[in-house]
Length: 231
Image (cartoon, rainbow, N blue to C red; front, top):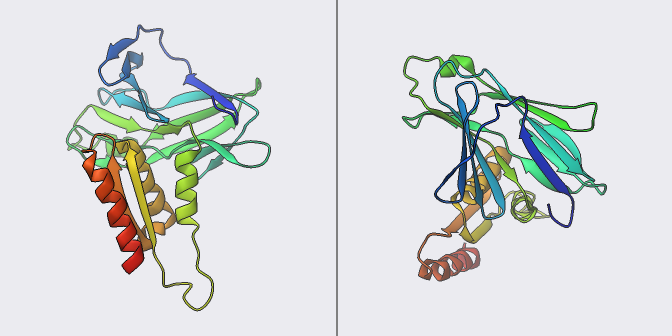
């Protein structure tokens, strides 16, 4: 919840299980669905959730129910965006991807969204069974959606991806984007967002993670400034 609205969510038709607290602000819900466990972690201004498929026979899909106050959901490609009355994006459920134990990745996950009779938004994730059933697949497989719970990262990404230059040099420019003290997930969000929109082709990206040495934050700022000045 923030000044723009609130959102809460949970897994539909899940088993009643006891939460297991782990390190790094992580809580695990084992066997929350058949062959699945849910891991939740708060990272900065984001809630990172991993739905872990423990074995090939795990449930074929899973569904979240989102309840919002003063917000309207909209499905765009594989992302669910929540807007306020002024059509400003407040929350976002990012397009998920999955990776197996060997590091192989796939974005082949179907996402659907519909409103329930009691006003909740039902979002269903269905991973590609062909990819999961490949002989080379190594379990567990982690499905990684991220729910953005603040507008700041989205606003920064929007400014960078929508940047334009008028006149004869409209196609000859680059955006220098420097981010300091962000989480790995936030860094990945920026990269994936720029790739999704094509902005990565004209973006110079400098990132300093929260667990990087503090002195590198100064270097990140200077590198971004000098690149923008002399590019």
